[in-house]
Image: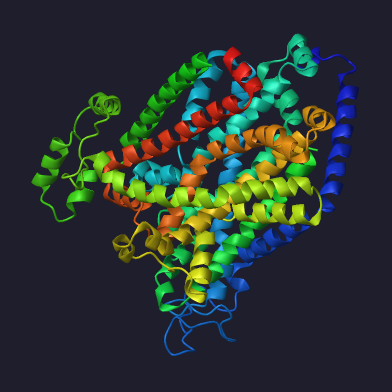
Length: 311
Length: 320
C-alpha cells in the first residue's frame, strides 16, 4: 500500500508527527502544573511502591506473623508496635494494608487495559463500517450497558467456580478470571465511546482522501483514524481504571473476587465488619481508608487528563 | 412525540430480549451443578437426578431457552429452585422493596443538596467555594459506596453513637420513622456517591447555560436574576444531569449491593448472593433482568423528561 503513496506523503507524515510531538509535550507541561494531578500521582505512586515491594518493606510478615498479641488477645487496637492494630488472628494490619495493594493493582489496571483494547477494536469497526454490522453490534452493546457490572460479575464468578475451560484459559488463577470478567463487562462501554468518536472522524478530509488513495480499511482504521483518536481513548482508559478498582473491590467484598489469604482491602473490610459491634473499629477503618485514597488518587489523575485533553 | 415514545419502547423490548438471551447463554455455558448445590453434597444420586428432571435441567438448549422466553412474556418465571414454596417474583418482591427504601431515602436526601451545590459552584466558578465543591464531589463519587458506608458505620455509628453501626432485625418491629436509625447510614453512603455525580453534572450544565446567548438575552431584556435562573438556566442545566443519572443506574445498583452487604441489610444483595451460591438459576436470571429493566425504564423516563423540559429536544427526537 505504501508504494501508491504520493512522493510528498513522507514529508506530510514527518510534519504531522512533529506536530503531534509538540502537542504531547504541551499537554504534559499543562498536566504538571495541575495540583490535582501531582497529588494523584503521589498517591498512586505510593500504593504502587507498596504493591511492587510488598512484604520487603512491611514491618511484619503480612501472612504468617501472628504474634500481634501485645494486648493479650487479638485483635489488638493500634499501638506503637502495631500502628494500625492487629486483626482477629493477630496479623499486623499496617503490613496487610500495604500488601493489599498488590493483587488489586495487578488485576484492576490489566482488566481496564484489556477492555480498552477490545473496546477500541470493536468501536472502530462499528463506527467505520456503519450499516448492518454497526446496527447489530450496537443493540448488543446497549444490552450489555443495561447490566449492572457487579451483579453480572457475581453471576459469572460464582457459577464458574469449577469450569475446566475457564481454568485452562486462566492458567488456574482466580485473578485472571476476574480480569477476564471485568474486561468483558467494560468492553461494550469503551466500544460505545470509541464508536461515537470514530463517527466524528470518518467523514473528515484525511479519511476520505485515504479512501480515495485506495488504502485498505485496516490501514485507514489503524494508521489514519487511530492516531487521531488517542486522546479520548487515553481519557477512557484512566476513567476505566477507576471503575475497574471499584468493581474488583466490590466483588472481593462480596466474597467472589480476590480470595483469602490475599490481604485485599475489600476482603479485609468484609472480615472486619463482624468485629464492629464489639467496638473494634480498626480492622475495617484502615483498609477502607486505603481504598478511598487509591480511588481518589486515580480519579484526580483521570480528571486532570480529561481536563487537559478536552481543552 | 408519540411516535418517538413508541419507537423507544419497541427498541427497549428488543434490548430486553437480547439481554435475556445473553443471560441465558451465560447460565447455559457456565458449568454450575444447581441440583447438587441445592440438595447438598450428601443427597443421594437418585434425588439429584429427579431434581434435574423436575426442573427441566436435562432439557435441550432450545427447550430451556424458550421456557425462559415464555416466562418473560407471560411474566411467570415459575418457582425458586431452592425454596419451591415461593414463586420467583414473590421471593424477590420483599427484598426489592427494602432496597428501594434506602435508594429512595438516599435520593430524597441528595437531590436538593446536590442540585443546590452544583448551582452554587457554577455561580462562584473557579473560586474557593467552587473548588471545594468540585473536589468534594470528585472524592464522594469516586470512593466506592461500601467504603463510605464502612467509614460512616465507624464514625456515625460506633464513635458518635448517633445511628446504628450495623443493621439488626430489631428494626423490622419499628415504625418507618423509628427505622430511620437503621436506614440512614446506608442511605447516606449512597447519597454521598450520588452527590458527586449530580453536583458535578449540575455545575457543568449551569456553566454552559450561563454562557449561552439565550441567558444573555434574557437578562438583557430585563428579567431578574432569579427569573433567569428559574426559567432559563435551571431548565437547560438539568438535562445533562438527568441523562448522566439515568446512564449511571447500573453503577448505582452495583453500589447498593456493596452497601447492603457491608451493613448486613437484608435487601436485594442478600437474595442475589444466596441465589448465586446456591445456583438458584430462576431467581438469579430474574434478578439480573429486573435490574436491567430498571436501567432501561430509567433511561426511557430520562429521555422523555428531557423532551418535556426542552421543546428543542422534543423536535429533534420527533424527527429522528
